[in-house]
Length: 232
Ligand code: DC
Image (cartoon, rainbow, N blue to C red; front, side):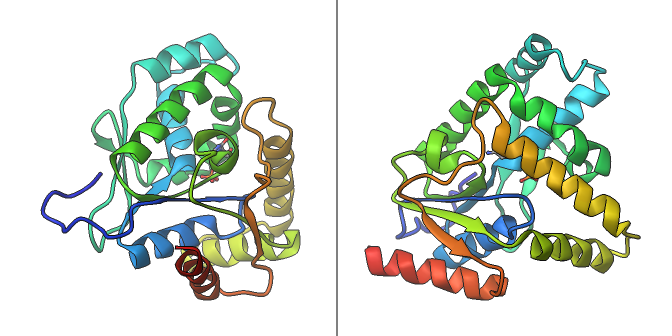
């Protein structure tokens, strides 16, 4: 993930941002990583990438041992290149777009709830954290993956605002949006995230809660950067 041609960043810590879908974690984590000059780690993208492979291989998504076996023979890489969007490689293939399909979005929870898969993902994520400073985002980074992270945030926003952000995002991409279906999907995803037996979404006790309901992404990035600066 790190580029040997780039100067070593002066910031050498792990920053984690957990929170529910649609709270703006990706935008904020990406922006903050850029500001700090470190790697961006999108852990949801890793669960999504494995889901792409499981669908292609027709692995039954409720077959946990099969999913774990698949994970064990898979290589998922997150490639940070300066000035470019994060690239997600699945066994060397760029799946950055494929992981965002509706089918993958709606089925990744199967992969994410499999304990043995999470075990493997967590090990990969810790390895990335050992190799470089990074800003990571997900659901269990502050609680499970990096409980010792120097900077922990939990990013939240009102449900209606999270829905509206997703609607705006899809419309900006020119996609038609069924608002009622989108709201139901987001409520379902919340329910699955909060009630997963392993690695459920939960604010780490020592994470700073940021409610972004009335904040722009830039304001959130600035607020997080300030807190990091003040604590350093
Ligand atoms: O953040 P996202 O929508 O890309 O996440 C995709 C899925 O992966 C979603 O079902 C939640 C799950 N996930 C997880 O269980 N643990 C993480 N650290 C990140 C995502």
